[in-house]
Image (cartoon, rainbow, N blue to C red; front, side):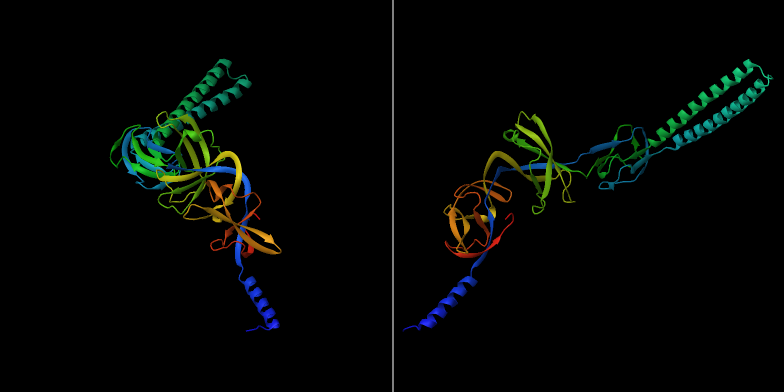
Length: 356
């Protein structure tokens, strides 16, 4: 069967339009040369900046308890009170004594001032005036002593109240109402729940490589889908002679109620290797059962974007990136989305990814 030439031309145009319409859309990013990191996974424990066993600074009978285990308290909140009736009566007695001494001093000052007026009129002897001035000085000293005793009794009274030194949660209670609490005995355990940190023990091999600006990503075993960013707050430069590890303390930038003191957490620490290399997103890599690892590069030829398969050798994996040690050069564009079913030389519709 012969085809009419004009019909062949139309058919060719139709097929050409169909091919352009079926070009697969792909997204690409540029392979870049940048510092290479190694990812180190760690397991540690969430710790609190403050964990205290609270006690009163005086002995007494427990009269009132205002919190139980699990209570969340603010700083200066009253947790318990000791029986303070005798101390309160002593304070009232000292307040009355202070008032009495103040009246006596005011009377001595009045008599001294009158004597000064009479002395100016030559109607009062100098020695008698000196006696009155000495009496005023004595009364002032007695009044100061009474004020000090009253303030001391106020301090003793205040010690019959146990207050929270910082905001946190009451994790343990060791006392009940009606029991005798001796000075220094533990009454509660209070744990701060803000500004939490995670403590990790790291092998000595990484001691000189970890820097305070190293990136840390944290997640809990209870919820492996939520990740938290952290920054290194302390690298303790003392190694355990048995385990050959050192303490790495990481402050968790933002936490939720899912992260609590004592919880086990994991962390991914990015440690610099001190060298540069070619880096591509992990989404650009395709792995085959025979062990091959490939990327699809994309290039422009006569206004058409085409892809080519490239076998690569990978290196370190860190975050969302992968080092490529062989098979790729910096500046080449690699497909990061839409690379599942490509063929060599296939034309594509290019959409640039981040960083382009």
